[in-house]
Image (cartoon, rainbow, N blue to C red; front, side, top):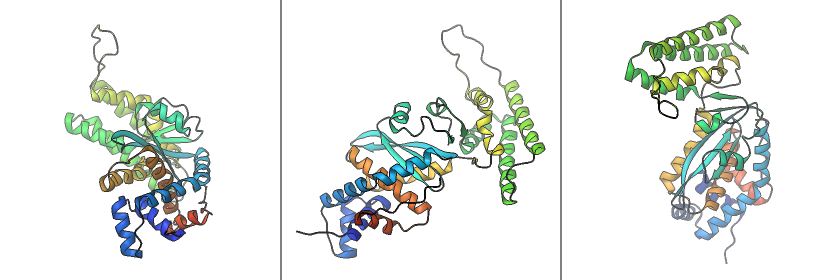
Length: 317
């Protein structure tokens, strides 16, 4: 019989969940580094134990995120036992929470429970299920800029280029104000940007009138540029939120960065063998991501789990 101590178990979880190694390469790495060759069952047991001991830490992170003024949300597809399922993320600059669910939309939001009734401002893309949620939100302007650039390349309509320059100018003005220690833009400056936004959207509406009714039932199909214009009008406050409240970022890059490693994991290690494995990964990876954001040693943090006293990160979202 072989018994592995906290540091060896922590190293195994570190290699699998942070360095994203598959089972076989994890065993090889542990053999090369420490001269031990645990079985795949032992590796799974270590992950299961970490998952169990991290439950109160994850609950504390969830509670802190529920109280956040601004939180980023996003989702990405993963393969679980040869099926496409989803990992949802809610995060800030200091905290990360992942949740695995078989569904992508409203059913997942309700099962996970973080977005329903969230009192802060959520930041996300313009995917329709997010827009059905109650509460304040801000839209990712990086997504919007990519869409504007693509439509300008296709149509060469001048208002699109003007709006691109306006958004980038607003972003630069906010960054300069923050660097100067200001907490908001001058009212006159905000009014000027808002007026320019209205002027360019009106120019776009004139160049792209709504389609004539076809007489058929249902909503008349619109062009992509007209759909974009409707969104620019209907979600104006969410698009310009970063200009009025410096706590709101220009984009949703935080959530996208937090999800990127899920795609790397699939490329390196392949799919999850079971829903349980996906759940193990999400809880442990959320803890690791939070430790990394707070400049805490990941290996020390993982070791603390197996000692029986998991390190509790700072909870100021």
